[in-house]
Image (cartoon, rainbow, N blue to C red):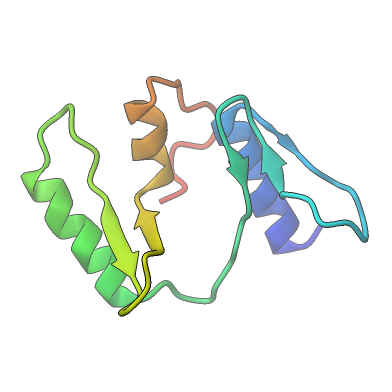
Length: 102
């Protein structure tokens, strides 16, 4: 099984969802009770992004979710980046499966 398929299965397990296996259609990779997920794999995440999240983790209180907001100059679109396990805890969901996924 290819690495990206394994990761989609891992994300499905972590979120309590199901991997969507339709071929040739526009569909999400994983659907869970609270999330519709598209999984994107890269050889390496941008270092500035992980540094920003690490910095925020040091300042966040237990009830706060560290989030990096990305925006494009001149656009109203904003993306929120956070660690999946922290998002799931913040949503009060139990993280099941492999807890060492980063």
